[in-house]
Length: 138
View 1: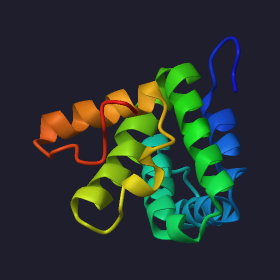
View 2 (view 1 turned 180 degrees about the horizontal axis):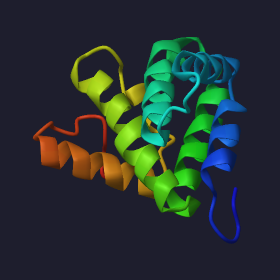
View 3 (view 1 turned 60 degrees about the vertical axis):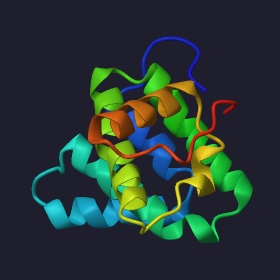
View 4 (view 1 turned 30 degrees about the horizontal axis):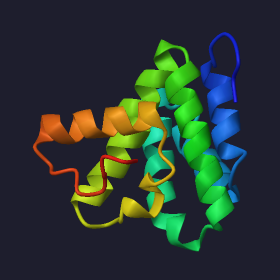
């Protein structure tokens, strides 16, 4: 976890894709698809969020927990570009998959930290989606 300073976009991507092979593979495919350009940071994180939703049921609990810890660290310590990309890319993609019943958010929400939880609850309130995945003691 970051102790000082902020996490830049390259470090954020490296940390996230370093937690699970399927995320690294998804990232490499996305980058290849966008050649010769680089994909926007928000697109990268949205794609990684959807990939997480597709693979979460096959993840060991320790890996799922580690992913949530990395996401929380990026929300807490990322630079503004990273925080925005994680929130509007990854978290909104995950919440969209959940509200469309393509993903059970409860599979990972128990490991959400305070920054991640706060953003998700605010997004649910903004979109009018009931936050049934969250209990006040989380």
